[in-house]
Image (cartoon, rainbow, N blue to C red; front, side, top):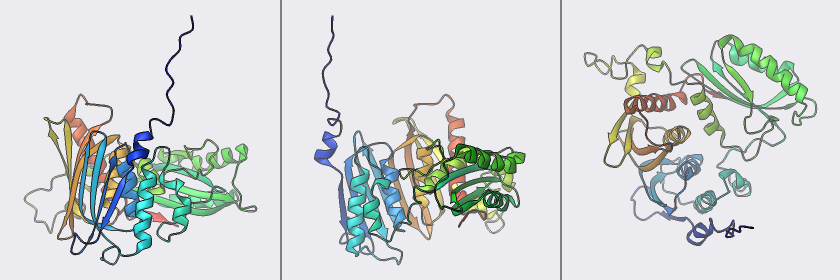
Length: 366
């Protein structure tokens, strides 16, 4: 007997989102010294990070933040200023924000699908061409390692188009975009790719590290839909466990000794503070962050929480005397853990590493 099942149009799931869409309001009248951006619509995992990345890519500073997600709906409010500390009056910037956030909220589309829109603006650094090959390296840092890596690539007749490196807590993450030196084309030959990987592995094998080509593409090609470069660097550093032994590295516990005056405390400890509390009634973990304000701060926090598979249900942030105070109400997407104290400690270590790795002395790009 033939059993039939009801037919569901594959476009039905996105019907509600297409009908209601994501509303973006940019208001220059409510705040006396900032522009208020209000965003509301259907919620989905990862959308908050996409929105924060759009605003961060424009080098906007955020003085106040309100995030709330209730069931399938969300509302985000950002008080922002441009690089000069002024409101957003440039209509091109306003149009870009509205179009970019609206596109990012649609199913099946990401920020990198908006190449045509971004080509018309000067606010986003161009993505590497798909004619280049991406090589990722993760491992333990040592003096001269980056020079040796670049020398190996040059010796193998690779032209280094661009290389980005982060170092923190004796770990290194490097993403290099390379092409063939003679043809300036993508390197596709499996034998040559294997030789490149073997040579690089021999350079860093003594530190017990890992080397790999781009995980998104088995051939190592640069995929134009690959996530933002800094998002990838955060993920690589997290996979390298740069949060381990961070307290021993600086020789101090997380809480400075009360006998020390602020002037004598380690500047790394003074510069940031992360704590995690539990809200048993709602099942949230509340991550509180206090540190000196800088650009891309919220991006670093949300990116790390997303990589750790935490969903942000509510959040708030404000500036006070050049310090940023942020709170995130989160739940793990895999549910509760057996050891909440261990989970809290892990979150603290990972968030402190996320705050520190961008300002590490070894971070570089070329």
